Length: 153
Image (cartoon, rainbow, N blue to C red):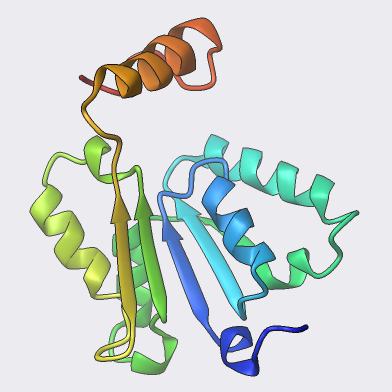
C-alpha cells in the first residue's frame, strides 16, 4: 500500500543534520522533500557521501533528500517574505545542547515553520548516566564517532 499523496507534498527541514541520520530516515518515509542543513562542512560531506552510497540501492531517495552547508540564519534570510517556501516540518534533533543562546535559536527555528499548519520537533539527549556513557564515553572517547568535547554533562 502506498502512502497518501499528502505526505509526498510535505517539505521537511532537519536543522543541524550532522551526518544525516535523521534526514535520511525522513527521506525514506516518502515525504516530498527533505533538506538537511549544517554549518559544519565535514558533516555535510559525510552525509552526502552516505547518501551517494545508499542512493545506488534506493534510487528515489536522492530525489527526495538534499544537504546544504549553511546556517539556519542564512536560510531564514533567503526565505524572508516567502511563506510558500517555509517548511511543513522542522526538526532540531540533538542540536539544542550545542547552542549558547537556546531561546533565540528556537525562536529562529520556528520562523522556518509554515504558520498554522507546520510542525516543530525538538529532541535532546537526556542527562542520565546511560546517556553520559553512550554519548560521551562511547561516542567521543572509545569509538571516536564524535570529536572529544562535543558534549558536556
